[in-house]
Structures are given as structure tokens and as C-alpha cells.
Image 1 (cartoon, rainbow, N blue to C red):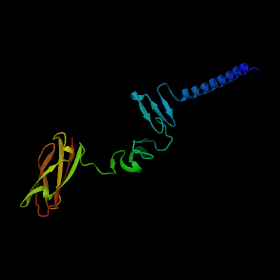
Image 2 (image 1 turned 180 degrees about the vertical axis):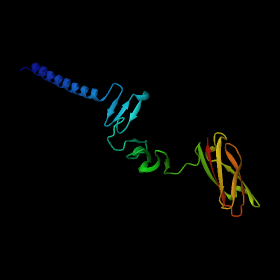
Image 3 (image 1 turned 45 degrees about the vertical axis):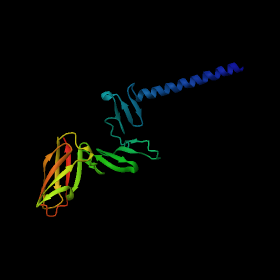
Image 4 (image 1 turned 90 degrees about the vertical axis):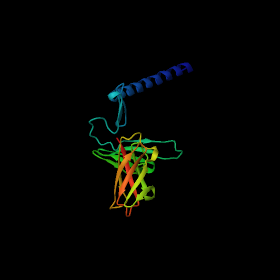
Length: 201
């Protein structure tokens, strides 16, 4: 057989094999996917509601495929398995973990679990402690000026609650602005300070 005939015969064999492989692949893909759905493992990217993701198993599938999760990898320069993870690791529960699998929070069927601290200067929730040295004490009462950390709230549409660091003292908010409140304390015999929390509407 000449070189030309050998090359031609080889090309025919290769093209035939490629055609068979493409035929097998397309028939398998058609059985699993539509032009708008992409399957991988037991999950699916689909066109429902303009685009949705089903992780772990398709709709109405009762088979247990484990705990689906999403890992985020921030450019930290460290070699790490994850920088942040969201995982559905229990029935009706979505857990959030930070670096080193440190639990941050979890959403359950009817509750929210906070595993870390709550930042004191958020735009929606703020909290602060003022020592008695930050209050003007007069006899058995005191007036405390409390400034909210983080630049204050956007406006005065928030609820503020304060308590006195003394079991026998009472504290109440007498006035407020977006950035601060004034707290009146009565019964200041052993007052060591006040603690306040504000939550925006």
C-alpha cells in the first residue's frame, strides 16, 4: 500500500471513530440535558425563573447525595481549602464557615444561629458600652451621651434600648439623633456605665 493510500485509510478510520464518539456523546447529552439545562454530577443549572441552580439533587429526588456546598477562594495568597463556605449539611439547615472551618452562622427552618460576634458598627445594628466616666452624674441620677460607632445610623428610624450596669439603676433614652442618643439613669449608687443597642427599621 502506498503512503497516500495508507494516510487516506487512516483518516477514514479516525473520522469513523470520531463520528461514533460524537454520536454516543450527543445521545447521552440529549437524555440528560435540554438546550437550556446543564447537568453535572447530581446537580443542574437550569432555565427555571430565568436561571436557577439545583445542588445535590434535582427537584423531587429523594436520593441522598450528601451535603451540597459552595466554596469561595479569596486571593489571600495562602494555600487553603476554602476562604468561605456555604453548605447544606443538615436537613433544612444552611451553614456558613470562614477560614479554617470556623462557624459563622446558620439558618435553620425557623431560626438563625449566630456563632461569631455581631459587629458593633453595622449600618443596621449597633451596640456600644459607655463607662460612668462618660456620664454626668448628679446625686442619684446621671445623663450619658452615647455616640453610635461607625458614623451613626442613616436617620432616626431606629429603636434604641439601654441598660445600666447596676442592678438597682434604670436607664431610658431621653433623646436621639442619627448619630447619638442621650440616656438618663436613675439610682446611680454603684453605676459603672451603660450599655446600649440600636436596630434600624
